[in-house]
Length: 165
Image (cartoon, rainbow, N blue to C red; front, side):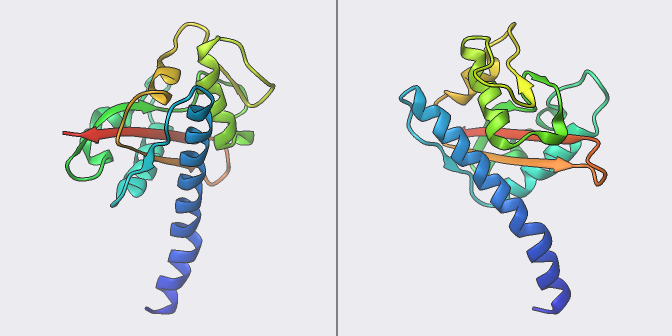
């Protein structure tokens, strides 16, 4: 492995995987609050595809949601699995620059009641429980990623929930 490959791997791939695992950990933490078992992290190139999808969602025209799920569909999941649900950037985002995976997953969870459980960068959408329902769904695995524009002006978030065909 040459020095350029080492630099690329350590500056791009490792932080991407760490963020993805952080997302999976928070998803499982909030699932456990309602007695749901943990979801496995999807294998293969699913985390990279989630990153690609998060960047696609970040750059989509205003008012469009889950563009990556519509375009990439089952490519967001490992071979032999298909995309069942996709959660993106929470219900109502107040300040995306300050958001963490814990904040975002909490906003999905708070759709259960429609009331924010604590002050953060986002809040639940009081008109739906879609994100909460996906969070609590019975799936085989989940892949996650966030994609931030270089100047931190925009961030795309995605969690892809997959199950066997």
